Image 1 (cartoon, rainbow, N blue to C red):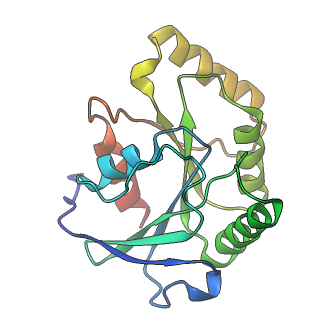
Image 2: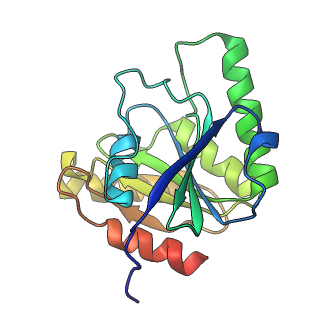
Amino acid sequence: MEVRPITKVDFLKSVAKVSECPKDNLPEVAVIWRSNVWKSSLINLLMQKTVAKASDKPWKTQLINYFLVNDSWYLVDLPWYGYAKSSLENRRKWIDETYKYFITRKPLVLLLIDWSISPQNIDLEFMQELQNENLDFIIVVTKIDKASQKEVSKNMNLLKKKLSILNFPEIFLTSSVKKRWSEALLQYIEKYF
């Protein structure tokens, strides 16, 4: 299957509450991540141009950000999970709204995992929660360039061993540095919809 090229990406809006999300029922692909996984780089790789700006502060994304892709689906950049240098109240709001977003919008979730380190408990717990809520998700591996083939194999085996879920998700390797392997991910997204 040939991948339809990304010809148009428009930032639509940022929202603080799920009630402010678009009402047009277009399909949504949500990107969720833990700090320092090169989320902006992956989004830019997928969209084939710079639409997400990288920040040296991993807690910068605090809103639900909508990008309209080819006038046919949304790429949704969500606040990240994990530690943040922010007040407990702010973090609680992000968590609550993100949870509401998943339950009400039912997107295809791209869960970004840093492959230069072994799978983290917080990632495994998050995957388990996605499975518990019957949400469709795939794992998108970032920083593949920073891992040796041996580390890639070891991390894949560790992930499969530690993750006790019924339907093991698809895994996509990506390289923002070498700008490779995004075609398979885009193809999966197109086929999914």
